[in-house]
Image (tube, rainbow, N blue to C red; front, side, top):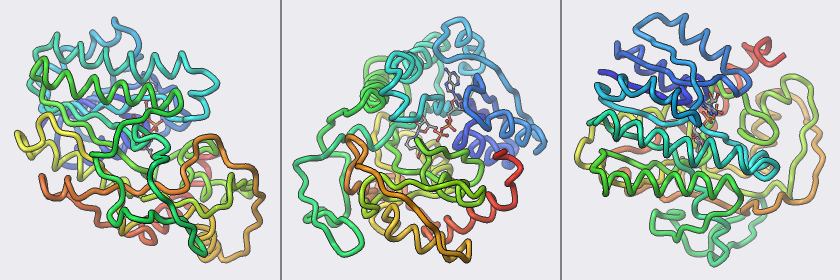
Length: 341
Ligand SMILES: NC(=O)c1ccc[n+]([C@@H]2O[C@H](COP(=O)([O-])OP(=O)(O)OC[C@H]3O[C@@H](n4cnc5c(N)ncnc54)[C@H](O)[C@@H]3O)[C@@H](O)[C@H]2O)c1
């Protein structure tokens, strides 16, 4: 099997690359190594052995994308992950965010077209395309927020409502990918991902909060909670996401041109501090001090994805529970503290 992964030295990308290397696939990683930790992820991938090709390039640069055309033309799957990933950065530098996420995805699609590729093209979209979901009633419980009447969470039928430059650039790309499937007959699948967490995630305060809380605590740094800490998210362990990519690829025509929510779903949710705090204190075996600040603009009280469509159409569902996944991430971070210096 031949797999091309843009953003392949990032958190999700390196986990995806290692999965396919372990299955003896030919793996091409394309990345400009802009994200902190990507050099370490790449060295780790190289250490695994297997047929890995690294192409250094910038997704916003048409010439660099040209380097990928020969790889696209005979790939079985292209997994497009390269992105600017922080909402906060998108607000301070919307042009760069637009160029990487919207124009970069457009460049990847054009390279697919130019190569006449028959590969499955997987796009890692985001639940942020659903925006604030202001019309959905939320109730406050003792330790967490809950939807008043969405027992399975928000489905793919939730109206699109892009918030923040990141929401707009990822949302524009989500729609471009979907439409290139229709207009140019590319074999595309859009996966709208919830919070993903796991090893090789160099989380920072602005992005990757599950990893960030663990890394910060391991390094003795202060934690700040924006809002009341009762915000709820569905969490998906990275191995389960990689399995979703693989199953969507192997489902062939069943997933062609489709859009799916891929997250932890209703069975795998966690509140940001009221529930995560006690879990962390148990793992670190100590009481943790945090400071509270105002809500971040646009922060939802709850987002939980309804993931039943993916189960129905290609048999995927998450296997790793939140306590299992969080403790695996905890052990990885504490065993690899030197990587975060
Ligand atoms: N992690 C999550 O919780 C989450 C949730 C929803 C969607 N996503 C999406 O999944 C994808 C992967 O996210 P991640 O968490 O692994 O982030 P990451 O930052 O670890 O990975 C992104 C990769 O893209 C590379 N990159 C950035 N700009 C580039 C450019 N101009 N050219 C080439 N490479 C470039 C970075 O160096 C990095 O390796 C992104 O598209 C992101 O929007 C992630």
